[in-house]
Image (cartoon, rainbow, N blue to C red; front, side, top):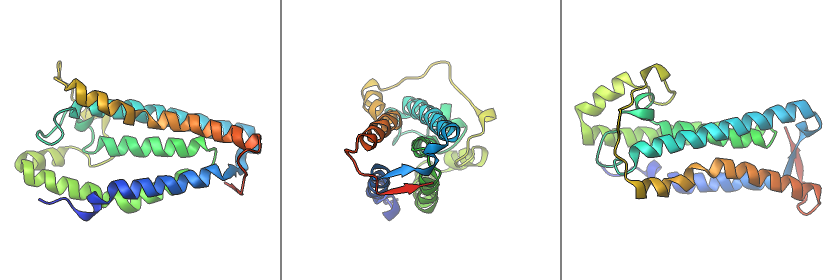
Length: 202
């Protein structure tokens, strides 16, 4: 089955969305910043979600390193949801959004994800169904498409991993944590009047 248009555009779409959101973050400040307890709660929640997302993506990378295209992976994170990478990516993106101490940014992220990524997930699963046939059909019947069911967790005693591929995936898993560090740097630039604040957002 050929790669769908939504899959081909996934990375460009994500990059454009990230650039727009980054520009919004760089040129804005939070209206909640003056309410210290609320801004602290938003920031802390964002840090927790970013940490969960980074660990989750590392967990996924461990299981698909060297297996992604050739084997139907159904253990570890893939035993609780069919799309754990997308789930943890959304969690991390929302976490970064909350770390801006706003509600608008994480809401925008959820809306953008909900508009575009379901079609990407469907296309990828259609191809997996074509490739793995009944095995994927049986897997999809017992495993949630997106939101995890922790009661279904199944892990092997041992697992063989391709270390070179796993190492390449390490950097991508940590981006969410790095983004929060960048947010703190942007805030310092705002306070030093190095970067102007164009608007305040909720």
